[in-house]
Amino acid sequence: MVSPVSIIVFICRYVNRSFRGKRRKRKAKAHEVFRAALESGINLDYNEKRKIAGLAVKPLNGAIAAMNRKAAAAKTTSAQTLLNVYAQAYEMPRRSGRIGGTMRKIAVLFPGIGYTCDRPLLYYAGKLAASLGCEVVRVQYGGFPEGVKGNAEKMRQAFWSALEQTESSLSAMDWQPWDSVIFIGKSVGTLVAGAYAENHHIPAKTVLLTPIVETFDHISGPAIAFHGTADPWARTADVKQRCEGRIPLYLTEGANHSLETGDVEKDIETLRETMRLIRAFITGEESSSPRQNAR
Image (cartoon, rainbow, N blue to C red):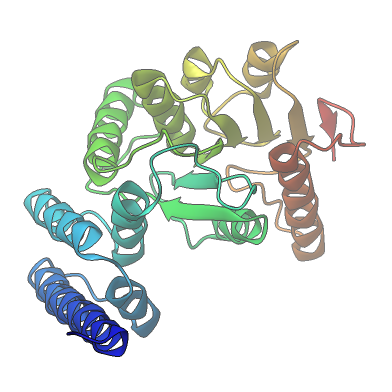
């Protein structure tokens, strides 16, 4: 007769063996991801490798598929963007998007033609969003024609190129689990963000940093806009007209397309105030600053 102790020992050994087998399989799959990343020209840092190693086999398969798609798309996606994409698309729960009663939030950064995500407005907007509990995805694109400003045809080419690259880099994204989606665009990136949200029916809250006038044709949900009165890419009168009555607009007197005036102390204060207003917009707090008021 088999004793209860023997049965318990057998079960414990079986569970332990099964666990070790899954861990070995996950470890092997993680190394497969590392190889795929290397072949795709992606440099994963230590923290990214640790996060990958902690994923189960299914999301790791998704990671490899995402990397293969990325490699075929002319290597336009950064390591961090790709990591966010497959982690959000494969690892996160598909049901309500809530974990432990907390809201699931994601912020996506859409850069301009020459204004990348490591420039002040987008860099600090991304850091701010992360501090508010958002997963942050940074879209990257490039290969634009020269002399875009003031050339309608080249602007169209740049927009369609950026939108196509955005579609490719976000192709694995599942937007359903998220309780809140925030799009943060800069310049042409505001147009890309609006068009992408429109194409995919995403109810995003949109931050418009120095938007071009065409952007407003694609913004239907909650939004907030920031514009410099010396911006050569968009006339202040046109921006005010398109925002009137529907989008809070914050003007910086004498600021250019980067919301900078050349006065360092003033520009730092503008950056601080812009982040404060973005924070209030993301969290839903009321801002004390009046609309369409020059700073």
